[in-house]
Image (tube, rainbow, N blue to C red; front, side, top):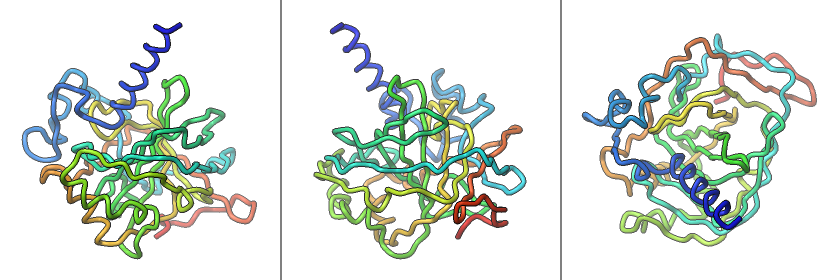
Length: 273
């Protein structure tokens, strides 16, 4: 039994590393130069899907690829306050959690929130429009066999209250790999959305693992220019622009949930801006 618990712990750490840190692999990658996205697949045998995969992410949320699924339900988010650590993962800035944060239910399966991180500019586009940043909330099933990433797109504007909780710590992160930030509150992230888009894709960093469920929320959030600069500041120059280029749809469709006053309606022609 002890050996089983040890194996589960190792598997959990490996899968979480796969979702968060390139240091888990011997090969390094970048967003520019010879180790940039066009060459990720050749940097390591583990990265082959980055070049050969047929269901890769990110993608453009183009109207012609979107279909409404009237069977979809709202996805409630009710994350609990918990102690957290701000982490410089080298290729993006993330937040890792010490305890259980909460679950979302997707297609009858529960996924637990494990970590979150930012990319800038946004990785997913909306009808060809690029946004200033994108937040990824990474969830795993209890058996660690399934990944769901919930994405939030940002535009410049008022400061994001969620980021404001640890904004001062971002200044210190340039000198340290990680910083404890105490209890973090999810009030600004909790709730539900009347619109979201979903498709099956991949991790957007090597090893570009496929079979990832993506949920892109339809409501834009705002962050200030200062907050955006702070999310980039601790990163090396080759990672300050850390958005993977768009990937081919290869026949995939993006399904959409749209809900207003208890009734499914025809969605607007453009992504909410």
